[in-house]
Image (tube, rainbow, N blue to C red; front, side, top):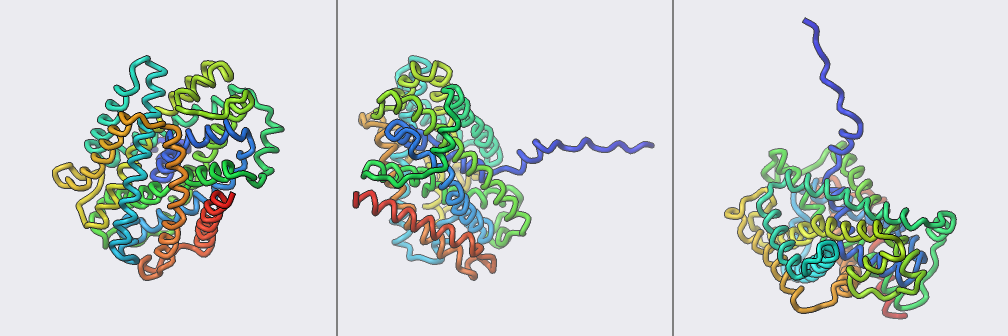
Length: 423
């Protein structure tokens, strides 16, 4: 009897299968908040801040890799690990601030998505806010982790819309490459505020918590139900996650580059420097970049919101569950994790209500990014202390290079925040 060899799995399929929480987290970083912030940066300053895309990539990658390592090695989420280092009142305060920031961000994301959907369909945005809010919350509660993770991973592909939109504009690549490699020092408070906003929306607190918690979910999906079973990680697992995070963060920062480029070459060059809503930004692009660029911009807003909102609401729920010892996890049924899902649902519900208060979505997104930029460095100090603790990290603390890079990131974010207020 002749043995037949099983067909070899193609490289692309194997590579795609190896990607996971890192790609989802990187793509979730380009939520409507990020899109609004990058659009404002391009509209106000043209291509002057393109250099931030490559500067923030290694910083974001190092931070997410450290959070992933904490989750993989300790077998706990980020707040669960920090609970071993800091007093409970400090952590509760941090969790409340995280919940408030995330809820505002979700509200603004829903408004941005709804504006885009109204532009595409003509149906009033308030209707879309309710539909998106209820639908996303229901899907997050009902879908099991592996299903939700795969859905989110495929949704990440929607970000290619912004790459295509940039090419539709027809940029002068020689000029663009020069702008990208010749950073200038911001000379005004508005410019420094934009730098802080970009840092805050790129290196965001909710991503820290989501990354670590998804490492725990990955372990649970492999049958490692207890903390002791999840504790520790092999060198192969750590390397695979670093690759995953490297790809995800590179993708995220490339999208940032192309959004700033698209709005810089269209809105800024035509004197449109003030954007009030994402719908206004999309409509302004139509006569300048063509209907395809407008369509891609609006579709991207909806797709990235569907990707990001579960991570925003989920990160808050994980933080509270780890502080108070609640049963948690996307794989858990509602009846077995009521408190966890209640926090998630309340966050989305409050965000839906925000839309009816007539707040300016883009400005709320922008200022929430600045708030994240101010809060993130304090969290980074805590993460750095936890990741450097050999006992907490069961003999597998983060590398010296990782600690130096994350420390430099915290210093840079503190410095940018101070410069914003000084100017």
